[in-house]
Image (tube, rainbow, N blue to C red; front, side):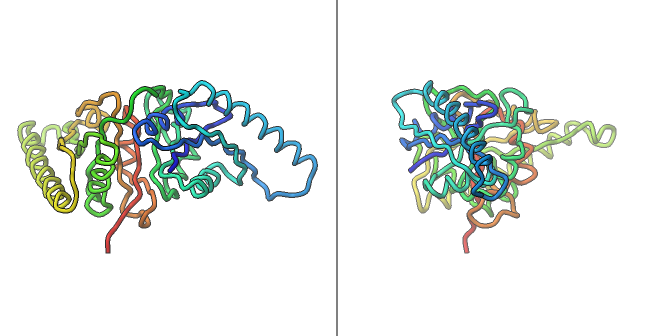
Length: 295
């Protein structure tokens, strides 16, 4: 099995390669380091076009080879330059051709250092991919070690898209710890003068108890059919999304797992609105899992 890591020859960003290496250390899989050369027109027997594409392919090949040359030598990394009508289409074509279990991509260059921001390529990819998509924060360099803990973000659609059982299976396969978190944003400033702080805290506490009970019920059902690692169940609360995401604490080797939204076709990735807010605040790599619905 293979992990497909997208390499941008124009930005020379190795963050997706670094994340793919870390995941490969966890899973033992091969890494395909891919640069997609975009051809916005149909192939034609034209000498000028042929020379131009040959030049672009050559530049992409050199940049990719330089990036791969500095990666750890103890892992199987194969560089591939692929021509397609668009970068998202090319990545999907490569994922299908190599039967990739995951596609690793990077953050938009307009995003904050150490955070994930979607660009035009990744925005389309998270609405069309049929395998999990993992995002490396901008500037991600960690290649030592492995993924040691998966944190599944439980939300309103989690019981529909199968996020908890899918993450539990992945944690068991990766021999990683499992944490399940539910985030709540309570903007107390919006209720200034209309609700007491103590009453607001009581609402959060009641919601937290109900959410943890729902998660525990799902875990019990999962344990009836498969072995599940020890699980930490936590609630992340804050006055905004950033405060809520940061409140639970993050360590090196962590990965956040988000489920696809309610609109996602079965077995396809689709980033929902709440998941998008969480993704942009995450200080660790993020994986978006496809939607798997039963019946």
